[in-house]
Image (cartoon, rainbow, N blue to C red; front, side):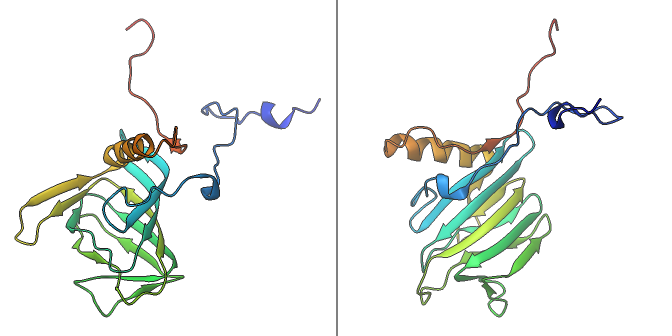
Length: 177
């Protein structure tokens, strides 16, 4: 007897999965200016408990993030446009560039104002970005929970309903505890 595809079992313990967790970025609204002027995004996967977040960042020419320290590693893949870290002006990231940033990296994200198109970057971020002002004072934290709240605030302000993205687990007790 042959098992149906969803009835196959591995010879080890595994988590149950009754559906493929997938989405199409074309079905997620661009949260225009949700993270600041010229800084838009689409949330793809947010897990505040683990501290993992994946977003499609959409940046207008001239957009800049505060100087920030990463508490975890970051993977970035540039799909269109170009950008730099001000601290590394000779290493321009263009379409097709893949970037890995180890934890404790510190830099200032900037999109040249000479760009003629929006810059689109897929970011997979572990932990948080701890932002600082130009004089080195604490500015902000950007992490999975903050991105989740920014999406909720943007949706409410724009009568957009629920923004759909994949999400991580949820803390709680086992039954009877």
